[in-house]
Image 1 (cartoon, rainbow, N blue to C red):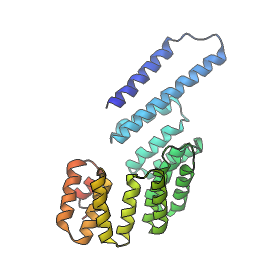
Image 2: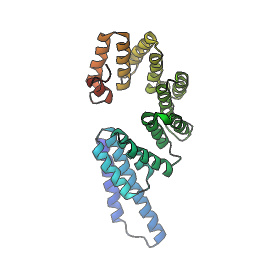
Image 3: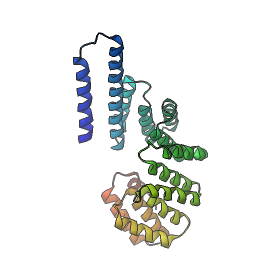
Image 4: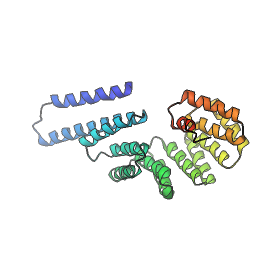
Length: 261
């Protein structure tokens, strides 16, 4: 909430300053100042939209995206966030259009490439090769700050199509960049689980939860492993932790709705 308020006050301050600045004599300078003001408005509204999206306030996120695009109709990051929101709303056709527009407008933006790849992986499995390609474009960008995320995402998508050796390579590459990157560590355990190595998977997930902060993803995997092994008491213990610490997560909701058991 503090970050949202800070961004909001920055936006108000920026708009107030733009109203107080006298019009310069040079028309070229005036156009440049106007362009910068428009860009800043679109940027701040997009950042607000992303914050609201992360908090699950999708209706407010949509409003902020609309304001961003009203300020600058070709602002690619706004279409990126809009794609994520529509994905969360299961508006797959709209999300596809959003991501395609974002990629066309900013073909070198690795965050957009990563998100588009994730969307294709989750919603269009027939386009998995294309999704992996987007992850690789992002991961190879020397200016991209989180290549381990794209590599781990690629690994998770390879698991979906049961290409476990390829998945292992992606997770290992991610860990070579950031040794304790949780999604990659969880991915390695998931590979063991998917291959039926339940004893090894159980040992590794217990070690991971002991040495790292639990996440909805790691707890859900632990639940699935224990259920597969028939240890319902251990599974219930992990379910309790999931519901206690992450009650609003999609994983906790899936368990409550009986989609996991």
